[in-house]
Image 1 (cartoon, rainbow, N blue to C red):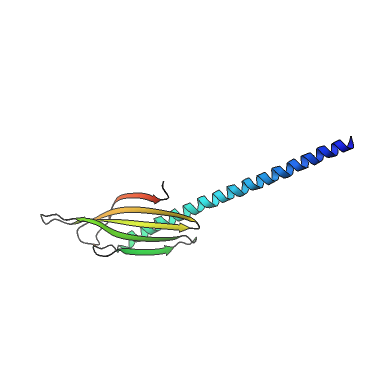
Image 2 (image 1 turned 30 degrees about the vertical axis):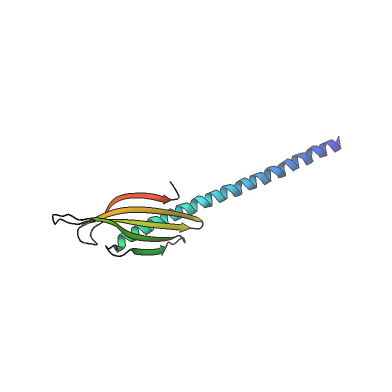
Length: 141
């Protein structure tokens, strides 16, 4: 009887080792997924900071592309640029309406998010921007 009890105990120990190994792999996978999600959130925050910086700089013009870059406290970074998409000139002598787009890319670890925001300005540049659209370009929402 002593031999069979030893076999049963060894069987339980082996099952416990297998279960512990499976739990460790599962925990490592969950940790990896959480880190990836956190990197994505940091990249999005950085891209939003790029949009805000571009609007705050008011560096848009009818002839040149504005470009900026920065780094957030957590290490995430952004690059942004503002380009003129078009202008509508009033033939009756009214104010010109300018249409611009900001593209901002946020990067954190392996994650990258690209946002786009359009805005219009009526009259002389730089003027006051009026947001017209916003969308996430990358990764697809």
